Image (cartoon, rainbow, N blue to C red; front, side):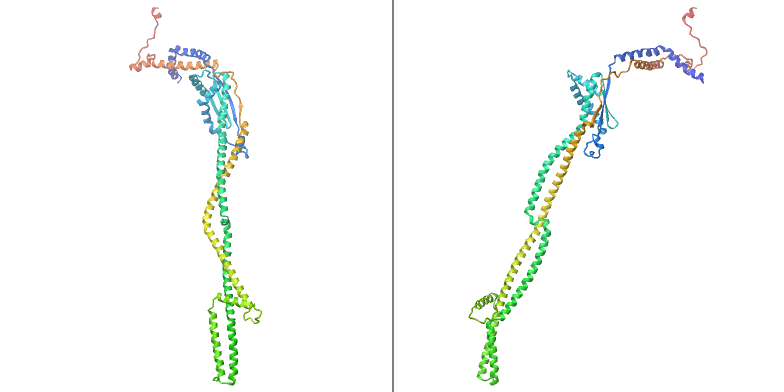
Length: 482
């Protein structure tokens, strides 16, 4: 096994020995070249700064709703792009006067170097580390401070702009909405003033009033019927107490009494009895005629008649009055009662018609009132919500300005680096040795691959396909002369 290993290793070692100069020279030369190159290479210096983003208000349950989160984890990629953008770097170059002559090509070159040297990383949840690799160490703190200031401005900008713009927008909307609300209030108040007696709140009262009016109308109509019946009864009584008819009744009674006395002494053929019978018949006919005439009199004629009789009853010379004054007064009271009931009925029906008319108009009024009230409520709700949000925006702005000094802090300021970032000479020397060894092995391998000379008998045997019988050693020229 060992012999086989040595047999296989021998060609490699032999090839290395044949190219020993090509193997050794790169290993010797490259360390010195790398060391010299390290001394001649441009030196780069490194410095960093650390920014603490502490959102303490989000941890306070009383201020959590009023604080605006900076969303650092979601925005860190965008902030990296912003910090490394040409516009930001142009601001840094202009403020620090890194290119005094303002040459566009130099500005472009410096911008590319800054973009390449700036690194922005998020450490944890609230630490931002900004580093810079630059050629001039005294410029590094100024550049990092300027970049930190721009970074803080960009970090604050969305929240601050959001709050400020919200305050301005909400204030404008509040002014506009307040005018609309005042207009809606004015329209609603004017409508209620113009229709104060037919508002929905009074519909219950109107319904109750309508029911009461209908009840009173029915009661008044019943009272009117009763009064008219009473008056008609009095008319009949007064008709029956007509003085003419009464006088005729008295005459008839006297005639009948006289007839009875005469019949006790005479027969019906006696002239006295005949005279009495003729007079009695005449009285009865007159009574019948008077009764028929009395039935055909109108109430106005009866009133006129009883008025004349009432006036005649005041004559002191007349002791007997066929008509009682109490009946006349009762009749007058009945007429007055009927007139009063009629007037009351007219008034009640007028009021009922007015209420019915209002109930008919109520549907349209209610529709208009509902529309105005809905418009007012919508405007009022919008105004209250805008006012609440405006106050919240103001408080949020005050809170942001109050906690701003403690929210963003530069806890590790940049300093002027003392040593460059380049490798020391010994690291360059060691790397030169390693790099030279790699180059040497590569060159030796290429040389072995492209070398067409034969050094081993097995290679010859493989080429000619014949066995090797004798190997003649190589003799140098010195041995030949000897």
